[in-house]
Length: 331
Image (cartoon, rainbow, N blue to C red; front, side):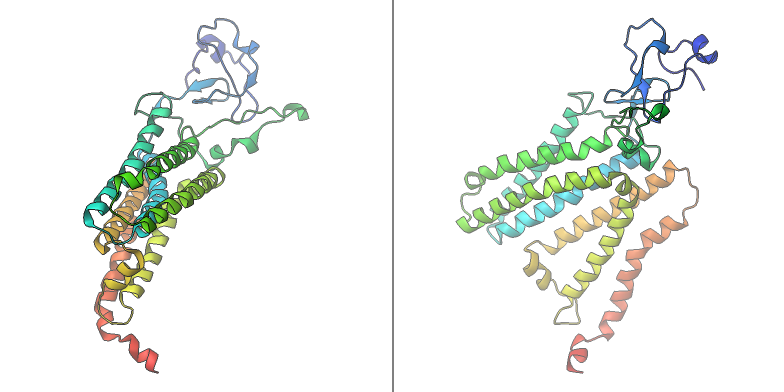
């Protein structure tokens, strides 16, 4: 282990620099400081820095693949329901206007993502530096403020997992602003649709402005738990959605039918299946990135995860032709 940043090798190797209490307290050393580090009190590290037990080190690592995929999942989890709700509120109108609405939804999301990336240090750059994540407790440093000698609590809680904790609330704030701004001019962009659809879109925007703060609050409170469990939760949700869709597609007939699902959502079946398949592939990539992060060499669990929904599809395809739901209704 080498000496921490700004610490002379003689001072470090001699053991004259005492360790700061707790796991997240450190010495905030000025850039041109030449005095004794022991004279600097341990305390809160600045944003974008993390303590190594002695001083606050500047975080300059890149986001790992798993963290990038998890952030994408967070964005999809909140953006897809908002888009689906907007499409349902719009209703079945001219295809030209539907394309315009899709472009509006894509513009809202893209603008929010760009604004978020440019607002995270280093400001004005699409590169995001990271402090990394070592354990779940890194998400909740506020619960690990030390109390040296049984005296006053030393408040050292900062964003140890920078920027994973602040990214989602910041994105939700920008997304809410772009939705509020774009929906105000929706009547000028889509003049041909009826007033009822306009009111539906604006009500959808109001619901989004309620859902986004709730999404940010859930992330701040449960972010550490969801960081590792979100792929598995989404995999379970995907299987539940598949079961519901099979029930809807088979309603009233023992053959595949697309009308019930389309009437319920006003979203083309192909589009829904494309989005869900993409989400499923993203979940599989998250699990593979997680496996690589922990340097696991066994792939058996990943094979079962990939084959799981395929087995359900094949099972339903070969058994639904022998099942007629009306027989159970008659009995």
